[in-house]
Length: 337
Image (cartoon, rainbow, N blue to C red):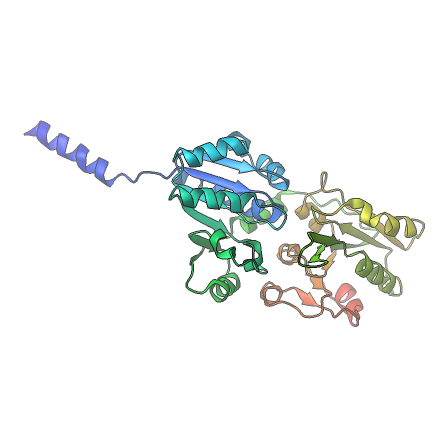
């Protein structure tokens, strides 16, 4: 009787034991890679075998987050799909690569569940190929978002076509930990202004490829305006380029403002300085429509100089100054967190 009881107990334990899913992760662009890599750092133990296909900016981000040992190349990733060795495909979505969409297509053919995590608040359909008539074929089975505004936006964009879930923002959690652990190294002789650039992506015509335009004209206007302001300290204006921008876009601005003692312009080196480091070493953060302004608003006074402030900026306490920059002086020198 005793041996039968033990045997029954083992069987029940086996039945109650949840089998962990084998996970394949695919990512290219930096924004999505940051969110996905932070998710994996916190939730990795909930899955079985983990493998990651990462290219472009995502490769460096995954390596820096301690996930290098899980990285496989594109060929191996496709073999995992074709051999049915993944139970779930989790992707970001890129505006500069079809990597994730290609894997979504492959996984759906093998009846593998597909999930895409959206780290932003704009151009949801465009990330999946809209306005192409076939764009819906690129959609995953499920979309994950990380705040209420993104959830409502996704529901409006996709309707009942796709299941949408809200997940914790582990990336913001990691950023707050990083911010508290690093020491500020800003030069207090200066009033330090950080500008977060966001390149404009458009099309010359529907048949041509995307065109990336830097925000240099708007930066020049902002610098000229700030040069007329009264500040009790010299100003250091640091431009942090977007990862897809070339630093040479700002070479003329840097050269033109190199001789001024009261207003100095510098360019952040993305290979040396993390976004959080640049934010911690600033007194205030400016930008136009960069999503990184939301990250900055977690820590510092943050100002957008766009035409109309998006709802997600309002939700994260990003201040608004219209493109004519009227009132900017008050926001810069009259407010502190």
